[in-house]
Length: 68
Image (cartoon, rainbow, N blue to C red; front, side, top):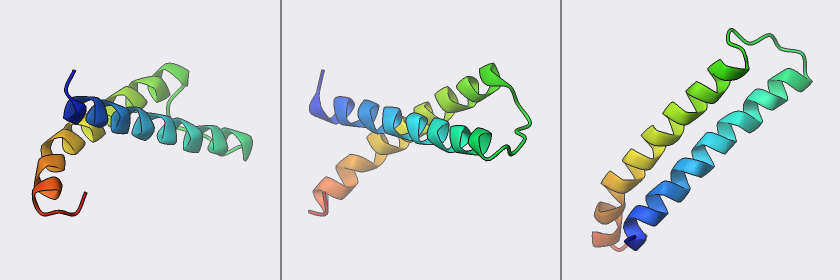
């Protein structure tokens, strides 16, 4: 696996877990969420894939400009 792909997948995992942490915080503070457990997992997987795709698409641009 290329380092670029591995980095993008790890950013996707970070994005998905960050969403789940925010959702858990909402549960702790008794904020009602419009979806249940499986809805949160689905949104998290969708968000993680979007983050991974954006990270994969933009990483080479940042590296080329010397910013990463």
